[in-house]
Image 1: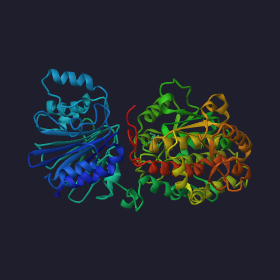
Image 2: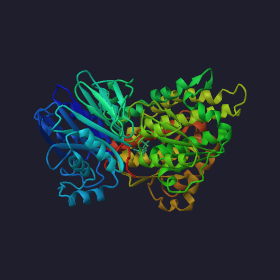
Image 3: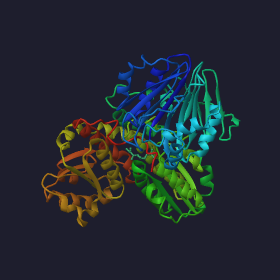
Image 4: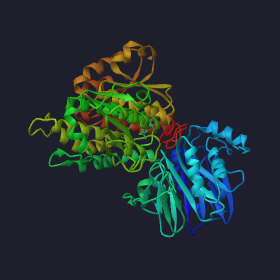
Length: 607
Ligand code: AGP
């Protein structure tokens, strides 16, 4: 995915565009560029690499004059990360500049058509067809050219457009990629994410698919795909600028790990009333709960692992069979899903391409759909029948932490809520609700109980590979722990269900091989202990994650991570915290770019 910004007003545009791009850099960071209009001339500056290089090249924007402009930070899909492929792209006549987030699926045929008509291409991108189409259809009205261009495009796009014939104006177009307008005083903006807007305004409009906006310093007009003007309500962003700043932490990831007690509290606390779970947003789902015969949880990456972690509580407490499916698999699996299936779709960004496709597939088969989403107004949130927001606040680090724990927390809430509505919580049974209420505290304890993690990172950071093992909810947390390690430290890390070791993986255990064993379920403790003994007797070094008073594990392991004792049904959200910290400190030891790991982007808007 990529990030786009636009500004028009009376101030110098370039510094504002650069500032916005810095906030969006988590969305892609292999090249960047801005196009600024000064009178009827467009200056374009592009670099391969980070926004910092773009700032350097433009002296923080000081050497690019003009009060109207657009900007882009790229995660390459079509064409290598080079200056030529960086956005903005210009039309052949130099009158239009375009930035784009998304994918144009029919770009090959459009490119051939345009080339046969004499248009010259300067890049390998899919985006460039857009700017040439605009030039082709322009007959004196950018708005009309955009309507005709949008009609030719298949795929997803959020576009920013400027034209030398309309100084002081920026255009924004949305189809299946996020785009938000910022409404200021005497200046207006657009951006892929509100984080780029909040330093300037809290008044925003979430564009709908198929809509486009015409912004000048004084006005914001929105049109539908036929060119008819439409009215949209202005929303107020409630969180403040500091939420998207590092706040004294070395990395966003560390800040976000530390924010987890507060984030999980913000997710859970407002949904507990008089000792019961009340989730207003799912009234429709609750009224039809008796008809639900199965629950399918679908998502990608960590959001999928959140589903794996929440599945146990959901199935055990509701009594409804629950299965988890990777969204990228489900969408092509011709799934057995019907009107008696509740599909829970999980996504921090709400923009993940495979997750959106799986959601649509399930909806088309008649399933009821419930989204667990963090980003307000995102595509997944709009498509589902009901949405439960996680209220984690902005998550900037590419590796999710508070996004994951709040997703798991929502699944726990759903589990207890469903059990209650289905009459499966015995009268006066307050245990599950109390466990959820205590979760933020337990997460804080898990942070406080492990001051030795930097030293452990010093011991393990040069390992060739790390194996994570556990059973049931321990296994679910192990999956996410291993992903965290892989994505930010680039160490090979794999999670195995502990009972599976003997079926192959144990062949890899040799002298000093680190094995991280999760043992936070007393009922399964002896079983995991026997796996610890098996790997130790083959030379492994065992780092166990368990409770402070768990004597047997304490004496079997070489090193220890701790969590407070938690009901195993709800423990994954606590277990993951020391593993996030371990991954963070290993990556730090290895000098990795923790907030922006190589080859990744915050949300994957392509298949
Ligand atoms: C997690 O650290 C990853 N960056 C990634 O696996 C992520 O969880 C996945 O791409 C899903 O994203 P989403 O929650 O925004 O849909």
